[in-house]
Length: 432
Image 1 (tube, rainbow, N blue to C red):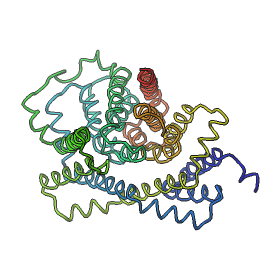
Image 2 (image 1 turned 90 degrees about the vertical axis):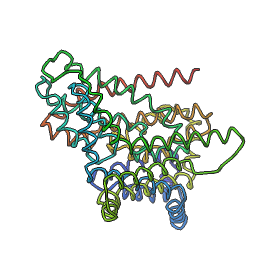
Image 3 (image 1 turned 30 degrees about the vertical axis):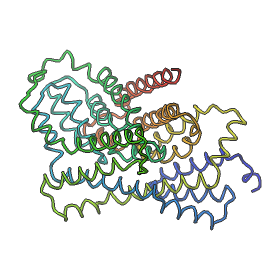
Image 4 (image 1 turned 180 degrees about the horizontal axis):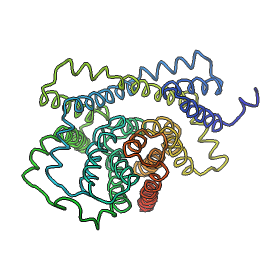
């Protein structure tokens, strides 16, 4: 027993980390796994049950946790309302009226669906991809890869995703700064997906009206995506306004996530009004069976983070890494990647690994801090995309009746290209 207690804090945290991920493989909800892992970490770090419970209560009731829960709750409700009202269907239908090129539609349809976080949302866009490439000589496993890949090009930075919201909260940076550093990943993902996945369509002439663009259909399409525009506009305008006021010497202490929350509420009101939805619809979306588990997951993540700090495990790990000379970059890349590979969800790899890795580069200058944070997020994201338990991959494979192994042969290429390209870009930015 004395030997176990005397183990380095890094070993203790890694063991608790593996324990959490192992429990999740036994179909226990990740929130339960995090709570159990938190209790185990506290005891192993020599803290009394009373202190552990005190830390738990403080983490659950903190302002940071409550504002995070509020934002994610609004996101889930908004996603549900746009789905049940047919708003999402109208976005897709109007874009299909704008352009009929097979490559464009097969990429844009899952990308449009990806603008709203929905569990297994790739299943919604799979029929659209199949219709778009009808008549093209495209294998089922490549269709799976196309639908799956382009469904997830936004989740690096799109502020409607709980994983992004949680990352911003744990990093304690302004939303627009995180978006600015992460947005290029979407461009790189589009380029990698187009090169590795869509090239076989280039020489196929079986598509209808290839490249035809209908300007007159743009108006209805832009109207339907207006709720999304409202969210982005609020984040950008309010973020810039706060920055200008700070430059003018007017210091206004407001929560960093306030622009996002206000934008989401404005978007919610827009969707309710335009779709003539009732308070009953709002209530049903609020108490949807997917909402409560996600909110419990947020509480579990914040409790785990709180115990890492309150038990001084993070402080001890930093000291141990300096003593044993373990490269920080190894931990920053490996921990999120493994978390993403095992959990198969962005909020899972962020919640499981960021409380451990963020303190390792917390003292760096703002730009270097963001670069390290982006590397950690990109590594976790690639792990998530390659995860065999990622729901979107599984439902897409089932829809197209494709081989999982064959689908992986298409997915790992753009994934490796994105990670390698981004590592080079971040290295160049760091050297400037």
